[in-house]
Length: 325
Ligand code: ADP
Image 1 (tube, rainbow, N blue to C red):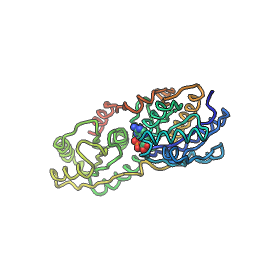
Image 2 (image 1 turned 135 degrees about the horizontal axis):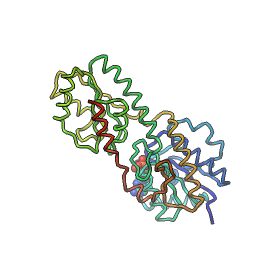
Image 3 (image 1 turned 120 degrees about the horizontal axis):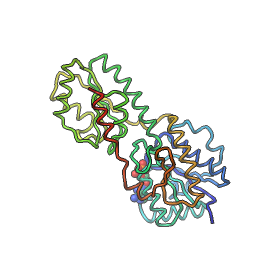
Image 4 (image 1 turned 60 degrees about the vertical axis):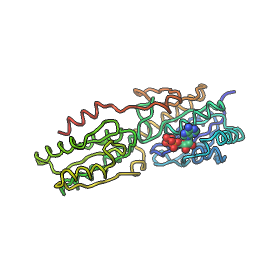
């Protein structure tokens, strides 16, 4: 028997555009005469049978909203076989015969378990601001996050220039330098520090000293959370120790990067992936993530999507260095 009732949930870290994806899943399902059930708070809602029937109207006027109307969570119970069994039983009771999971690689690990252990047709939609998911050029939320970050850094540069400060601006990215790389290039940062490239504090300081000789006494250094030289605060302290005459300042952009109204690119991506996810389930595809590669729909096994990573383009890092001299 084919799919008749789809469950949809958002899980793990939230990202702007999740609502646009929910809307697309619900409206596409309506178009193809399927029933849709929203699951609250990610896998927690599956374990606790926290469901809500959804229709076209339940998703009106949400395309422009950040966060997720279904809410999200991190659910420890779902990490256990008993928790997943409970989730599966609840799905069966509710008549949900397929599931769309909107989230990051952790959420896809959960989706893969549900698919492998119970044969539930599951399709994943990549939504995370980090843009580090294998099998898609972009994840939902990345474009909004980098635009929020460049808006903030542009403002920080105004004050840095007025006071002759060196600002160490920390952006999100514990394991991925994607946000730092794009924002560093787009704001003309003097230096960008990312987890993927080893850095040496002495070369960084030598570079800053040369810049200082050229009368460049203010500047922006973008630091990804996972920079090998440490957090923005730690890098600033190391620089201050070696070049005491520098007036250093620190700004940690933090959670503002996750919030806000999604950008046009994120709304469009979320809409296309949401539609494609429903079509994939109707086509009998299961255990896959829907991505986009070179503007075309890509189907990636969940096992790849949750175990491999999308590497950054190191040539962008090299070009950023050339352009900041
Ligand atoms: P993200 O999707 O943003 O990477 P997390 O890594 O926090 O977020 O994962 C979200 C949720 O997915 C977890 O709270 C858990 O419920 C579920 N999950 C993650 N890894 C597994 C796993 N190996 N098995 C089952 N469920 C998992």
